[in-house]
Image (cartoon, rainbow, N blue to C red):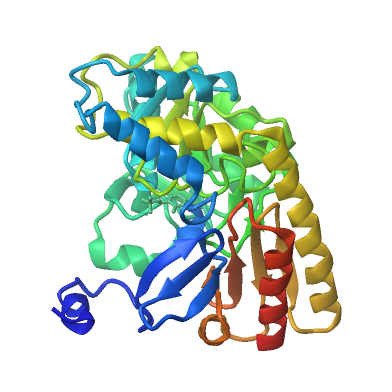
Length: 390
Ligand SMILES: *Cc1c(COP(=O)(O)O)cnc(C)c1O
C-alpha cells in the first residue's frame, strides 16, 4: 500500500499536510522524504519529554518484561496504585480515577459532579457551568461544555443542563452558579485551544467562593496545561486556588493514551462501586510509563527549566510585538499563543516549509508547545525560524 492509499482510508476529520512523519528524536522529527523539522507541537502538548526519550523507552521496555500490558480493573495492579499515590502527594487531590484521554477525564468530572450533587440529596442539581472560549473535548458531555458552535451544531441535541457563560460578565457568572441548580463549574486555568488566554487569579478565587456558596464542584481542566507545561505541576497552583476535581491527560503517559481525574475526599466520598468505569483505564503498561514520566515532569530542575524557557520566549515575543510582527504574545512556561494581525494557518504552513512545526489556537493565533526539556539553543532556533517566516 502506498502512503496515499493508506491516507485515503482514514476518515476525513483531519486536514493533514502531505509530509509523512517517520521518526523523531528530542525536539526533532523526520519525514519520509528525509526532511527534518523542529517540533514545537509536541503532539499537541503530549510529548513533554520530546521524541525517543530514554526514560519513556526504558519504562515501556521494563513494563513489557512483566508480561502484563492490561488486566482490566477487575484486579489490583501496582503501577496504577503507585501513580495515584504520586499524583495525590503532589496535588490538592485525595483520590484518582484513571481513563484514556482528555475528553474522557472531563466526562468523568462532569459525571462525578452530578453524582456528588445527587448523593447530597439534591434532585435537579444537575447543571454544569462552563465558559466562553473554553475547550473540553469532543465526546458528548465534554462537547456540550465546549464553546464552539461549529463543533457542536452538527451533533445537537447535546447534553442538557450545560450553560456556557461569559467569563468577562461577573453578573452573569454569579447568576449562573446556583445552590439549587449547579452541580459543577468547569474552567481551564489557561484556555489553550481557545487562543492561549490566561484566566486571572481573581476570577478563579471568585469561582471558588461561588462554588463553595452553592455547594457546586469546582473543576479545573488541566488536560493541556497540567504536569509542568506552565512551569508548575498544575497551572492553577500559582493562583493559590484549589479545585474539587481536576482533569489531566495529554502529557501524562509520555505519548501513550491516558487520562486522570483527581478528586478531593469530599467529592470522592459520594462515589460508589459501579458508579463509573472503564475497561482500559490505568492499565499496568500505561500507568508504569506515566509514573516514570511524572517523576521527570515533577522534578524541580525540569520545572525550573520550563520557567527559564518561558522567560526566554517572553523576551523574544516582546521584541516581536515591538517590531509589529505579532499583535500580542500570551503564555507561560512553554505554552504560548502569538496573536497575529492575519490568519494563522498560512503561517503554520510557511513555518513547516521552513522546518518548524507549530499549530494554531483559533483563527489568528499560532501556538507553540515545545517539549518541556527543549534545549535553549533549539528554542532560539525555532523562534528564529518563526520570526523569519513572519
Ligand atoms: C486536548 C484537550 C481536551 C481533550 O483531550 P482529548 O485527549 O483530545 O480527548 C480537553 N481539554 C483540554 C483543555 C484540552 O486541551
